[in-house]
Image 1 (tube, one colour):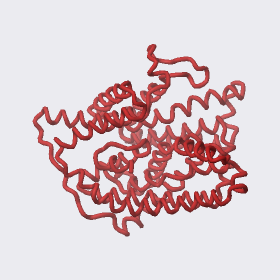
Image 2 (cartoon, helix red, strand yellow):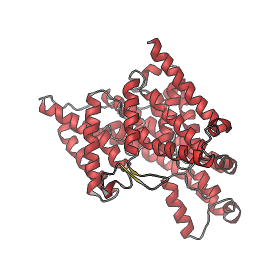
Image 3 (spheres, one colour):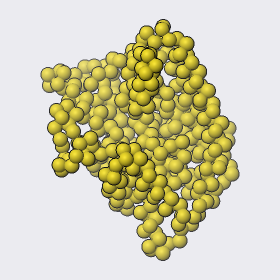
Image 4 (cartoon, one colour):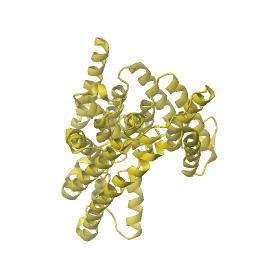
Length: 415
């Protein structure tokens, strides 16, 4: 559902849907929004079913592997995620890196994760917990687009309505994107298993890897079905560490952990033995939910696609109203509205200067994981930097990151 607004009005409903926005609006501009909406629905269904199958079959084994992740592995995974910035910034690498560094700087605002000292809060109590991601996301993508449209109005440019096509996704197009669907499902499930990484990281990682392996990478960023297919096959994996280890994989499963404990159940290895009926009921419910999501989504998107027929002069005030409601509703805070406005202006300036927005958002998501685990790893190892290269999983992630970076720099140098 978060991808629907990302495709139709360029406003991602969630951080995970921000990756879909790299391709979705181009389909809407071409009058092919229905095709993108159907692909996002089917990809979400396939990804959901895949992660449910993994959850029901090899959850304990995968959870044990994820349990071996400590600070160095989390750091290397974060670095791997950050190399995606290079992929997203191909053709404008310097601007992409500047945007990513700005995102890392913004994410450092607030309380130091290890010492508890306050950083760059300017004596404002509202900044103690840092910059809220949702108001920043809404401002960066949605409000900036409203400001660009407003500029067109002041310049006397007529706001045109977009035509929609009744042609959806075909079986041949689905089959042609089977590799992207499978790759997105695998990456989404694997990253979901690792606690505290989040679906936003998984979506961008799946997009980056799909672009790297694509036969037509030049089509990415211009409306590629491969990009849509990869970024939406992300779900379910976060339940694996919750049910098998009692460790929530993300914010949603943290709420589920509380719900299970209220019922007197303790998630962990014994849950499968003591509450086997409950566990497999959850598995069955997930399968049923995915089929309902496919049916509901497939027919709902045909109606929702008509949003683009609303004249821009009517749609933009509605979008602004929803931005204000969405920015305020998270914490019921007027300060969050100010954050949204600042990021809206920042997004407007970056768009006009042709700076990519995705690296800034990705850096804000990953910076906390990278910084905290880098410092924690050094603290545990008594400042021994070799800890990042002697642990196999950590070394593999760093080697892949280096390979991606060197390959892209080589391509840029050849150009």
